[in-house]
Length: 278
Image (cartoon, rainbow, N blue to C red):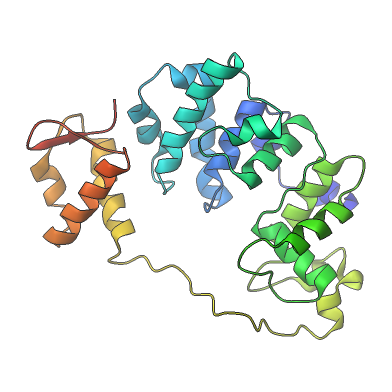
C-alpha cells in the first residue's frame, strides 16, 4: 500500500467524496474508462450533488446528462436509485449491504465498493483489475475465470487486511489498472513482482475458454447510440424523420428504436415523434 500512496491517481471520488458521489462514480465506471467518466462525473455532481436533487428531475434529464458514456440504462438506474434513497433512506445512501442491494443498479460489486470507499468498511471489492492481480500474483495464472468463483472470493477475503481495507482495495485496483494490465503488464514497475507466482512460473499463457472482444461497427449498440445522441441533442419531441437519417438500415434502426422504448430510455410521443423519458 506504500506504492499506492506514492503513485495513486488524483481522482475526485478519492478526495473525501460523499457516499452519493462514490455511488455515482461506481455506476459511471462500469465498463467505461476513467478518462471518459471524469468530465461527466464532475458535471453530474455539480448539478446533482445529492440523491434528492437528481430524484427531483425527470429521468430523461439523467439520460441526457449521461452523454456518450454508453450503456445509458445505467443513467435510468441511477435516477431510480436516487428516488429509492429519498423515499426509503431519508436521502442518505445506506451503508448496509442488504439495503444497498435493493437499490436499482447496485449488485454485489457495487455494494461492496460503496461500503469500502464511501464508508471505510471491510468489504471484498472484486472488479476485473483486482481479480487479474490476484490471479497472477497469488494463483499464478494469466487471467481469472470468466465469472467470479467461490474460491476467488474466499482468497480475496483471506487477503483483506483487518485495518484500512478500503486502501488495500483501491491499491489493488490501481495496480491492475496501471501496471498489471491485461495485455501489456509492466512487470518491471510492479511493487509485488518478487511475490508474483505467474512471473515466477515464466508467464504461462492463458489456457481457458476463448475471450472475444466486443465488436462495434454496424452493431445494434452503435445504432442505439446514434439514435440516443439525436434524442439528447435535439429539443423534445424529436420527429421520427430526424432519427431515420442517422442509420441507413431501416429494419435494424426500427428494431433498435423499439428496444430503446422497451428499455424505458425513449418515450413515443404520438405516432411520429419520440422523447427522452419524462
